[in-house]
Image (spheres, rainbow, N blue to C red):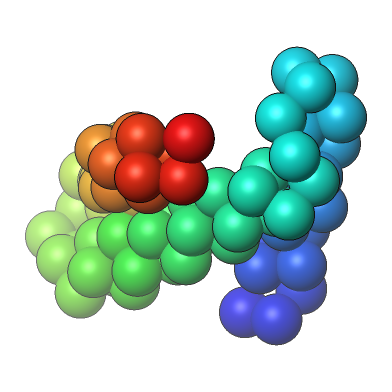
Length: 78
């Protein structure tokens, strides 16, 4: 969990340098995206009817959970 959040924060910092947004703002957005993805992955792991459903939910749910939250946080910070 710690490594995943650190990687997400680092990716946010890298994206912030490329886009010109502030480093701290981009780091916060990266951290928020990583946290949402971890929560979505944890929720998806409870549903295990088949390997196909589990793998698709394990990828789609974290992305679906992270996108709106990161958008709202980005609007609030920007």
